[in-house]
Image 1 (cartoon, rainbow, N blue to C red):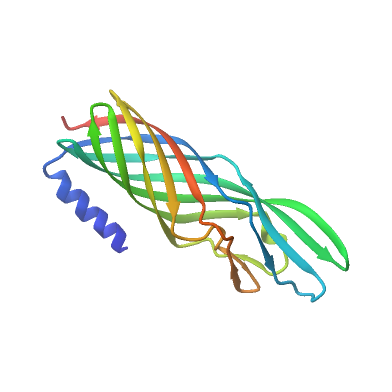
Image 2: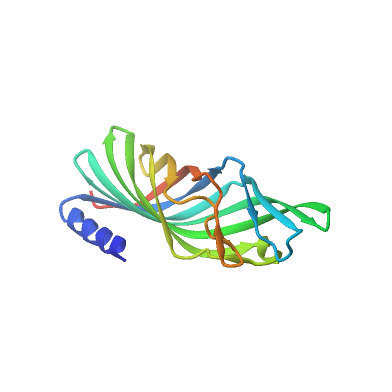
Amino acid sequence: MKYFIFIVVLVLSTALSAQVSLGLVGGVNTIDITSSQVKVPTSQVKDSLRIAVVDADYGFHFGAFARFQKSSFYMQPEFILNSNKTNYKINATKTLTTIDTLRSERFLSLDIPVMFGLKISILRINAGPVMHIALNNNSELKGLDGFKSNYKGATYGYQAGIGFDFSKLSFDVRHEGNFSKYGDHITFFDEKFAFDKKATRLVASLSYKLYSSR
């Protein structure tokens, strides 16, 4: 809530004397995850269960942006619906029999980056914080004994990158880092598990300006 209040106050104060542009944005993103695995408890002492990240498919995003520019400096808050899919390898051992299977999770989140940047001719350089609000999680891990998804609330990170403006069209490429470990929504028997690495994303977007005050 404090994050939203800060955004509203900052936007209102900046908009009073800035050029305002509004538009739509969409694109693709890919998550970089170093393969790692976690060992989780089972209801039987002799059994074992290991979960490893195999890969993450390309994700898609779509939303809206507002840009407040004064001279060469600008602030750009965005509201983006983002969808991603992650694939896991499940190694389950039961009574000396080991079975490997592949399962996946799909995530839907509302991403709110607030970018601060410098515009030089058609080139833009920007960076800023981003908040991810969990909306929905469809997980094939639900069939595993003791599994529970704690995919809710908000997580935080940062984005930095460059963009190019061509009249009403803009193209952006950004690197995103996160402050939480990947997979920390996974719990087994009420114990939280997370993979070692904090995942990063490469985000590519194409935006179209619908309105400009000048």
